[in-house]
Image (cartoon, rainbow, N blue to C red; front, side, top):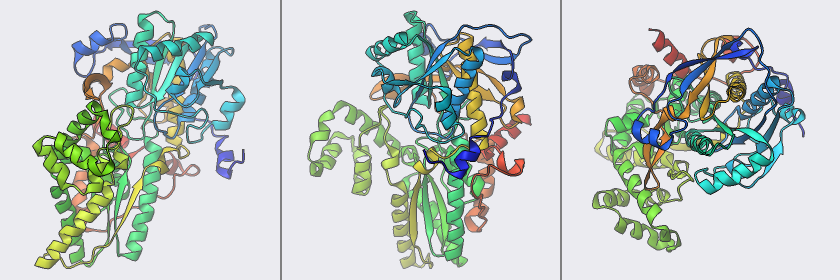
Length: 550
């Protein structure tokens, strides 16, 4: 394998870790936990793993002796920077528990477990991937673990390899599956522990025990670098409005964090759109007013940041998508209807209010809403070209205003979608350290016999030596939601809190950013140089930590 100069240099980087994990470890248990909502329903579904206490690891005086343990690991869902370091931390952790321990990776996600497709991960293999981006060490996949037959088929290979613990590295849906699997294996005394690790660049898998999901830090820095480059170009040419859609399937954490880093003219926050009950026209008008205000100053250029999931948060659109989800789940015959007839077929199935909304959309956008759902039943928002929709609609509104004399500027647009560019970037120092610690913490959870837990590393705005490592029961994060037409237990998504410190900081500044050209150009992720440049956590984490101290 040919390596870049950066890969060679990064291979020597030794991730920083919490002091508590550097020697003998003991467990401190907290209070028993309960789910965030629907307590009785969740408890009934998870009788063997519900109500476990959260735990924290502390330094112990003497090292206990542990037998060797074989562990399996799965990378599930979309890629996020730092996944390889989770596996490296897990590998080093189980080897420190007992050098005879072994690690097996299941190929291409949960499907590898079901299909018995695996490889042993040895030291030479692991060393090739330390501090690198991507999930290519074993690949990832989106197969959903939800059926007893899948669990039983997976158990066959786990028993054959004498695997006593399985670590699933994934987002909210993947960790929901991990919890279901942990419950099933516990209910039949399978002798297999299941541990989750919080992965998603979207940043929506977090709570009081999970400060952030890994990959968010790196992805936001990569996107902010590119947005900064566009803003520099924008301020140089002074003739384009750039509409930039940013990855983040539901929550607007990425858009908000990037806004705090780069100071765009406009940043839409989906959660605010929903809270204000804004229509698509309200959003278009808001952007058009900012364009007109800047044009009045002679500035016919600017930047607009758009969260990927915006369309699902516009109340009228949310209602439409919910009904479409049910229709598509119940009427699979839709897929074999001629494309020319699909639009009318859908309109006839919809309620009048939702049919009116559907008919009002440009046909290409309307049909994008009917594309196949992902394996978890979610609309594939990355396929909906919201950035082009808004650019086109703002242009039409400005043309109307120009005729009436309300607007006198020029309006030309460029559209962008930044998604895959950030998912497999080489991890920032923060993510390299955080991910390694998450993997090492997962090894400690296995050593102490835990199952149905998610690896937790907190206090990460402090130096790494002061980070707090432990575990949180996955059931604690769960509630009931409608998926594919049925109520299912799922981890509750952490959306942007409109009364939270990050959003309040943004809201305080955005009016000035809209009119002025106050762009910030973060530049590339810095690995080498002063700590204040290389090791800053996200603005989101800094603001949240600061607000907790007040």
